[in-house]
Length: 432
Ligand SMILES: N=CN[C@@H](CCC(=O)O)C(=O)O
Ligand SMILES: [Zn+2]
Image (tube, rainbow, N blue to C red):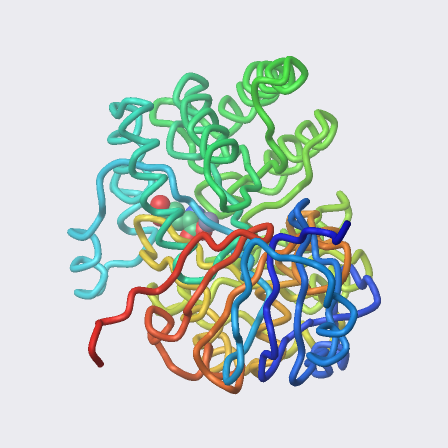
């Protein structure tokens, strides 16, 4: 009897494989030498994994006796891996459009934070929101990310600060992980700000002695899957000593270290992360030379967030210095009420123009390296046999159009496919 497969993508003009030898990350020259195949077909099995990639005629002959749930003619089009967004804060209530005008008028991020706005504003709204309300808005946001090509996204808690609200947020993320097609990496970020009425030391104690033990219990009971521990290590928020204490306790509880560091002030967060074996550190606008060397040696990935520097008019992270030193550079949208951007194609464009990355580097950073930052590059982040069949089809004969057409992803992305199933198909205006 002939074998049955889920999906056949036929004769794509280009398929961006990213890598072909099971690499867990790319750095230095390997980011410039992305694997790209031309006139190629892709087969995805019923288990959602890639079974074959090869020249159209070879695949045609090899699978001539097989049947497919669906076949898509990709001639004149390109296939790329689903994008990976390595840093988002997507669970919250109440937008901050009023603060956008304050920032445009000259207020800094910390001016607003220290006067009780910013994260504190969102914490108040999120504490008052029901789980259902938070889930509904999270679902809407994740679907918008999916339509922009993201098939794996990191989702942080961190607008609860107290244990009950942090758990409410993690439950909402857990529900999304179970119910939605998009892949979710869940991050506990109870140390996103110091709660009103507490010192940073008291807040850190609370996290270590109350929050983390409770999380561990829920994880052991199978009620929650949490993958990462995060802290906002910043002057006026959590200093290096409190950050160390929280991250170490999180690691001891089985979480990957993935935290905010060296964003607004140099904190030596990169050095700390490298020492603690962090999987990733985000922001790094103020990283030191020693921090760059330490991160490269420790294979600790740098999640750069071009929307933040853009929105807050900060100096750009030193992407070129990090790339040249061999740091594993990844990208994230930083979607949050301060940086309201769902789109990794826009993030890649900003990384190219403002951070001087090449388009190949940006794509590697938004696929295999972002998957590495989340500890998922064994199964996601490139198109290789055995990996999940997560991919996007774009309506262009050259893949670079996804980055070049600034803000054009809504038109250019034709389909988003997760584990071999078409989850999104772009609507066409009939008759044109
Ligand atoms: N810097 C800290 N956290 C977020 C901002 C969160 C917020 O302002 O609500 C970030 O990564 O940009
Ligand atoms: Zn963040």
